[in-house]
Length: 331
Image: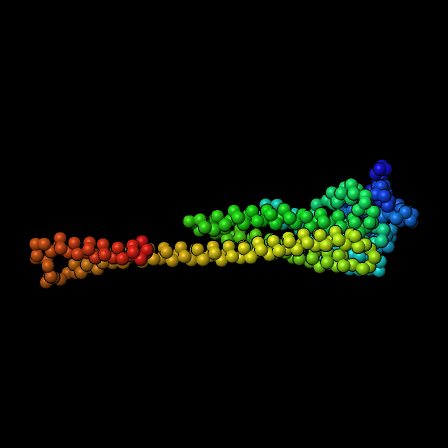
């Protein structure tokens, strides 16, 4: 491997690969010279939040379309795939999770017959593992930019897997709080936050199916038939992630509904208990209110056993009411 040339800070990687997989680091200005040598190889450039000067230079070296370069500058694109002459422009969303919060980024890919340019913006892991993988598999790298594109997209899709797993564990932990005895407002808030994050994740993963489906069926000559089989495998992973995301979203919706139903049921139980105790207190209160009136001729005022009989009657009524409410599970 040759000594790394002096590159701008936004250029993470700039290398020319021969047909047998040998790597040679080059400068941006040497890209056109490398492409002029028809040895069956290609050039792979990786950028992270490049400045306009670097993009202009790459546009001149590779002959990139103006509209594609303009999209790469703005970095607020919907996931899509566009064909410009003999080159493809692909925009995908990437994601990283931290403390149940997803930070999203974008990757823009320029794919030509003999080059691949990846432009990362925002939250995105480095594609160095993808380059290292291809360099370890020269037989696969021999298929050119299509193989490099597969490695990048495969890594981007795999980055979604730990996010889904983390959210699945978070949902399992919240389910225990849902069925706790005491109501926690924070539980509902966390359930809502999880569903919101998964909805955003769904918006990032869903369009990947269309992009990978088109690449797996492409007939533009940029991707040969053998590499298309690999894109079908990545498509299968994307479908499974998308289905897992939808399942988690449905479970979160059910969890919110169950939580609200349990809160309503607990409130009903509290109201029943309050009503039962109010009924128990109503009987002695009613009798006491009678004898609190200032009447001279009241029944049983002069009887010797009036008060004991009265207290016994009140106790009997309260006991009967208590057993009735206890049998009805109001107490």
